[in-house]
Amino acid sequence: MCQAVAAEGPPAGVAAYACHGGQALFLLALDPAPGRGGWGHLGGRAEPGETPLQTGLRELHEESNCSIAPLALAVEKATGPSVAAGSRFHTFVVEVPHVPAAQIALPRRCTDVEREQWVWVTHADLMAALDSPGSPVPVHEGLRSSVPLWQAAWRSLRQARDDQVLPREDLCRTRR
Image (cartoon, rainbow, N blue to C red; front, side, top):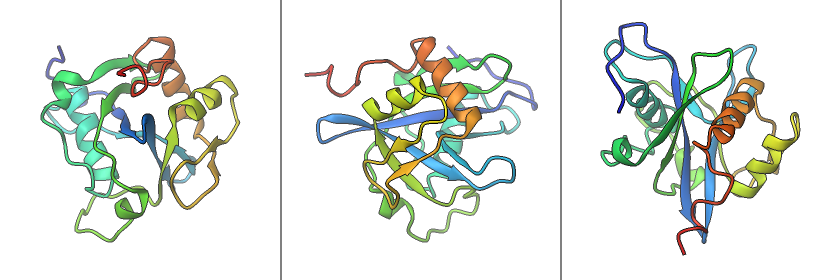
């Protein structure tokens, strides 16, 4: 169970996946901030009084261009956190509804959008990229053919997998 954090709570994010076409697809977004300029799961800084999971879910909503609303059941169904070595960043894994990448990119009224592009990648391709530092991830749905993971995102996702928060097996295929 997550406990309330002080005003300076840890940054947190969500590796959001959707079961679509019989497989897990993970949502990645481009962070254009200087020094980052790479792709990763969605997350950011805590607001006063937020738990790490609340931070991750709020950031998922904001950074998905308000296309994926904070999910009431996510608190009960989320796995995690995993905290990357040498980092305070908390990573959770949460199932979300599939929203097409083109729909996420539509203009919205969401004012806190810090991301510019979104793609969905398959579980298998994400796992392969986590085994090969620096390897681009093939895109399943989106306007690019592949994307490079931002190094910090690679580290936190790899740690989440090592901690068994991000399963090695496709979460949508194991349900059958």
